[in-house]
Image (cartoon, rainbow, N blue to C red):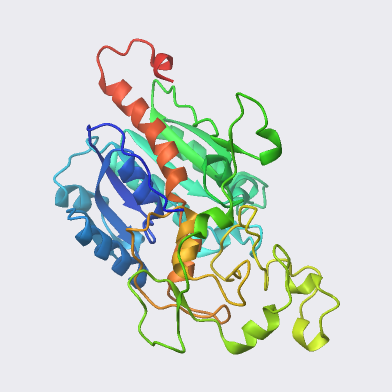
Length: 388
């Protein structure tokens, strides 16, 4: 599957991207018709990825490499020749580890949790017409510093409302929008009054629900996503990462451990295999040494673990990850490709994808945001609901 996101109208609206990462959200926003004037990202490899693709696409987007807390939104507005209230969309996916249900859930006690409120700081200065944010579901129930469940989200929404925005939010499953991945995230969209924004309707559903005339399309599968890529370049044959990142770095021992695990199963569930192959895994380790199933969407791609190919005894390559995330084949990654273990302070290519927003999902939401902005700009729009 060579994922391509359709262009919409010729009208271009301006946008600023915060916590840009590898640019997954940026791709969808750009394809929805927004001209991204600036990106802010702290990771050096993500910045290389952003700059490479900006250059290839011959865009003039500015990339600010650094800590978002120490950058001045006033200066960014000046650099892109925009004034307060002239930017159409401010968007981003702040670090989610502080709220993730698989992490320590330290919320605002984790400095990464506080970064969420940088969206408010930038919105206060920039005053965009709309704000779009992606986060893990855990944000909705995260405790504030007083231990109040849901307190972080409530405070965040109140701060947006204090800036005269009307926020709406929804938990969205990526597979419902053509992404071959069972990834759930919460999206927040805030616009100025009047607010007629509605999240896009799903386009895909479980195959068993797609058997009537008016049904949605069935979920896209892993097999459909990675079809046609062929054999990757193997690290033992070449130390140079190919331009398309279809590169296999699987260590010999990990090849041995995944051998004999059937499609859709994890190593820990195969109790008939030798104990030395299973190692210290327990029944709870359902995503470690997991082989994906060609006939189903993938589990949520994450930063710390790399899933295995449905048929071959190897990790999925970064290019296969990009296919499963909905990136177009024309997009390239920059930075190292590492194995599945170890702690890293910067993002390798698998982590760049796992941390990003699937472009088709960003496109679907940004397209609805664009409708509202155009409606608000139009003097003839008497009833904002008529465009929905």
